[in-house]
Image (tube, rainbow, N blue to C red; front, side, top):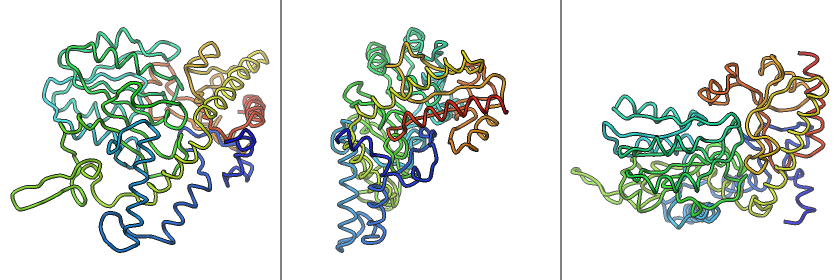
Length: 408
């Protein structure tokens, strides 16, 4: 995609023409027309179920659905048959948590920065005698790698870590964590929560060899809601029986038992979100046309401007505090910036900013343990970026923050 196209990219997003400054991309990105058109075509020209019939419309739906798997697999560097579609990242992680054969005494290692979706499924396993070890972070948000290494024992069955924090924006060192896992005695599974990295950070699953990787389609990839994915190493999944069974999962069934299909069919029980998968396929094409490196570069420039702008606000008497890596570690973060204005309630700040047509998120961002670790029990305000955001919007954001600081 040319630089001219990158400059004019906002034309692809209907809502951006209505004057909103959309800085809530960590929760959900805006959706380009290419995705909307692909889904509209499915509903108006096809509308059939997949893998259920031999008529022309069902075959066409199945073809597009299978192509969606192939495009997503290629996008993240997976092999054929290593991605199953899910509802979202939460759904994908819960599938793994419910499918592994846990034993009393097994241990899980995770971190204090995790989204609740990568925390609660593991905590729930405590009632079955599974122990959860939680690794701390530095004040700037970096994982305490030494503590992680020392947390692994011969009973460790899973290490589960976010690729990117949805609060701090910090990019975690997955290759180093993979090495630590490989050096351990237990050879535990390695799960990566990639909800905030897919579509924002260039990577291949071959870079750090996770056993599982969960992601959403509607955040960095700018696809529709209700669709996400679970990457699994084929050799690992052969050790596991999926927790969800039903339509589409068995190869054969009789009154005595069943034989499952190969994945992803064995994981995708019931009628899937067909339109969502087709939309996700178009979203992957769209992001690929732009180029992840261009997205990274653009977001890093905008992030730098925000962090630098915060310093200017401080010099002007505005008490603003942000969390996560600073300008000296810009390469270690993406465009997710959580902050607070003095002692002002984060919800009041977000509501006031909305009056300027600026969309921010406020609260604990589904990461209460992290908020407690940072000492921000009321949470924070979060600005999160994508490729269609502009320097002009950042200037307006910073100017509006100054006005809100004086008003709230």
